Image (cartoon, rainbow, N blue to C red; front, top):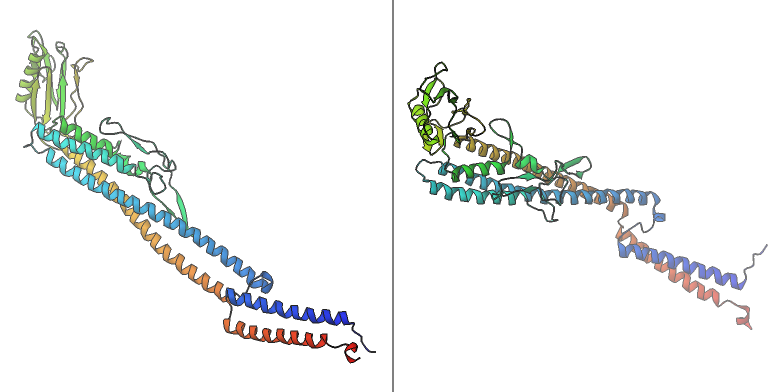
Length: 416
């Protein structure tokens, strides 16, 4: 049986063959121009799936690197701010030692206190440092809320942020915090009694004591608005003093008699004389006194903490008052050292996190390089093979075109 092909079918088959060869040439040309072997999932379904997984891994790595860079910027900025805080506190400590030197006059101490007040405002400004996005470093989750309020003018300080700490994912199995909450850094420092105290309050108390010419040692002040009642008592650093208004003498065993004068000033002077002459009980500090009108100031002769007791007794009333024992120089210095220690601890944490970021950065880069190499093995084109194939396909296309021209010329009408 003889198969017969119509002229139109022969023409169509020739055109189809030419188009097929052109399609192959175009596909190879696109591969060569892009350098990629897989241009569509149909080129290699399994390889296309692998490329999709690898691309997603690279995308995750890119986000990890963005988080890492963000954390590095905030931690570096925080480290710079805390370096300035450290220098600030060290300068204040130098001023404290200088200010409580006995050779300084009251005017000298006020001048030194003025710089400490300025340093205090600088410290508040450093605690309110922002990052490049305008977020406060030490506000916790309240990034747009100024965390610390207060100044040397008010003497009142508060924390307006929260305790939140942001965790950033910097690797497949690794997270890191981008900072510390402000209360941890600048607040919640324990004083000698175990109470929470802020750095700002420490500096304010120190500057205030200097500006008011407080002694370096512990000190308390008694103020008599009225003469004490007859037989009422005061206990000053372990010694009991009984006020006598009618010459009847002491009614309290072992009490030192203090005659009530015609004015509160006279009574204060009589009390001063008695305190100056008193024998110091065992385990108690000797004291010095100074009187001014109706006020008597008692100062421990020994510097340091817990050298002086609060003034108590039945003579302390709604009108006649006594201050609590003031903070001595060494307590101020201890609190400054506590503040410096806190800052150094936080800076050590920042340094450790920055080291972690550097380590994870290298890991991420190595992982990215490995993924890129695997991705390249799957999708990159063997250029030598592709060019050889391209040349063969060009030859096949030219042959198809020439054959089509020859076949197109075959017709019985050409023989007439």
